[in-house]
Amino acid sequence: MLFVCTGNLHRSPLAERLLKARLAASPGSILVSSAGTAATAGSLMDPVAASLLIGLGGDPSGALARRLTAALVDDSDLVLGAAAEHREAAVRLSPLRALQRAFTLREFARLLRPEDAAGATEPAERAAALVKGAAARRGGGRWADDDDVADPHGAAMPVAQQVAVRIAESVEQIAAAVLAPAPSHH
Image 1: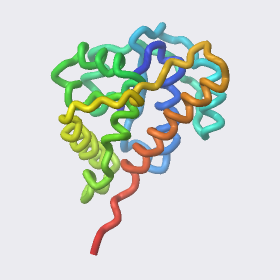
Image 2 (image 1 turned 90 degrees about the horizontal axis):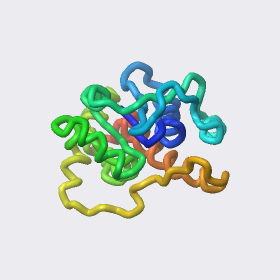
Image 3 (image 1 turned 45 degrees about the vertical axis):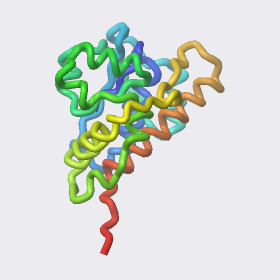
């Protein structure tokens, strides 16, 4: 699972580290990473993003920026961009792999249906089923304006906090769907 933003300093590492924290209950099942379309490799996570992440229960330590490559996209079963431009960048790098498995973070959370993973018990297996279901649902071509998460880099704290909340909402939905087996209906 790969999160993508521009600099890999704020939005994508925040989403990555938050999801890692939420999935810690089932370690090793899903690999989560992040990258940036214009990242300077080795740059430290934005200090504002790092402090917001800590507040949300995540761990920013060791988060270093890296640039998005075709290989990273090829190795991912799910690519989640902070905004449409990041999803498009992943598709350009690896059209065959990314078309069915690249979404914006909020688009994926919106298209997510936990029941798509009914019957799957392993988190990785559940995630694969959720991606398939979301991709099938996307056919309608409706694009919500709300799907992009704006770049908070250099913005005032309230803006950065709002961005963190938007990311956290989507990450929580994804984590819950990946981890929680759907209740059985008898």
